[in-house]
View (cartoon, rainbow, N blue to C red):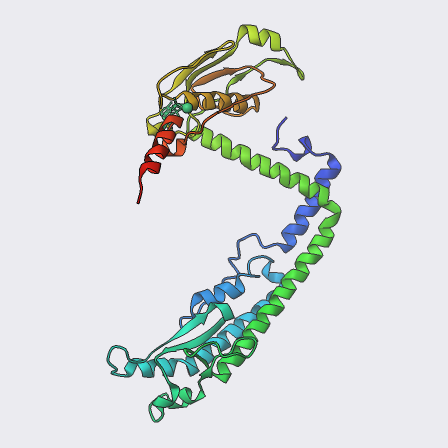
Length: 349
Ligand SMILES: Nc1ncnc2c1ncn2[C@@H]1O[C@H](COP(=O)(O)OP(=O)(O)OP(=O)(O)O)[C@@H](O)[C@H]1O
Ligand SMILES: [Mg+2]
């Protein structure tokens, strides 16, 4: 059965439902990752400010449905930029022009993230010291910035009535935009509610398809192979003939977490029944057992296995029991982990 044609996995009614749902989504949701909805950007204002406020709603809904609120936000951002340029820039320039020794006043236009505001941040700066100098008019307008509860934010943060008004306008415009986006999304959710089963089914199918695609592309990159599986008569598997004829034969098996370039040692496995595996500590016993189990599991799931070729019979259960733990990520066997811990416990401060 091919998954390319939805009619192979869904009935005609469901396919029609899918088309209705997908066209409704396509009409409303923005799919070009907001190319026509760039976040505002102005040289004088830190970009993170606009990013934090506008990324909450931009790029979700097609611009056509939110054009008026979008334009209102843009205009408010422009007005904020003008207010900042008029009220803060002369103050910053005045401070920069001062031939103060190191440790003199400093000032910049900053983003106060916690308050989602753009304010003037002055270090060792006292507004009244500056009377009588260029920029005096703007310095006179500076007042301490207040938080949403009307409390002074700190000694270093200043703003002006004009900047505050522009900030309020900008935030209000964004609040309206968020409200509109939510309203449209809610309407869409209500409309899609009738197709919810189809949507859940299709998205599950999509997740499975994506996982299969990722497995196949990564498997090919690592040169894994599809194993020869047990013959089956419909759903009845002829276990007897497989057990007697094939057993499990894997050539060039490698631990699945290794990449070819990592100097992997490949093993051949010819397993008919019980076998005993021995070898020195760190010799690769646990890794081989894990690899065999992984290959068996991947194989019976119809997936690729980390080997050059493989014949995998039908197993109705796979069990792996490890009594002590090793750490493949550190390239350490159980014995090496144990030895390492003993060494560490012997180190006293
Ligand atoms: N096939 C392999 N190719 C390359 N390196 C391997 C392979 N198998 C194991 N190794 C490396 O050797 C390390 C130790 O292997 P493993 O833990 O399987 O040894 P062990 O025989 O189980 O040792 P112990 O007796 O201490 O439990 C692994 O973490 C891995 O880095
Ligand atoms: Mg081991």
